[in-house]
Length: 249
Image 1: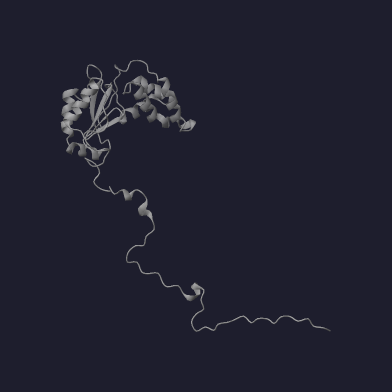
Image 2: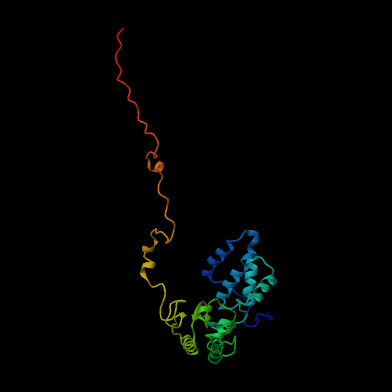
């Protein structure tokens, strides 16, 4: 892993969580006992990054350390180890471009060229502070390769043209639609589903009990099971008792 250092000059001297973040901090801290509060260091660093315009300054890391009563160095170690934490300023819209094998085979190199042309070199922030980008490892959307993550949203099935259009809209404050950028829903086939289209598969009509073919027939019921006398066995009839008579003395 490459050495990662945080930007001391850009971070300023102070940091404070937003008031609306306090409830989330209490939620995460509430998951751990009083003597295990440092276990919440990763979620608190994540919240600090969101409240600090997408990156972690040194004062933000110190605030997390103070909240969890941890030595500063322990928080620095976590922040510099995990690449999900960015240690220098980023744009309002930060593009994480997946460069792992499936995306690379599907055209990620061309998407890198677009980012370099439209934004600049990796981790460069445009003059208007709106865009920045970096290459990352697998983001878990391989079936929709190539793809990028912009802030919290996935943009999938990209071409150089579609990515360029997305960056242009973000630069000019226009809305963009995340998800696949071709004619398909999520990870379904392009153009629509071609299998499992029979409605009876989903209306419950096929769940009724049915016998499998070529199974042996069940045995015929025995006389005992049917409540009938067995063949050759004597029939026993109950003898009627004579009516009782009064005996005169």
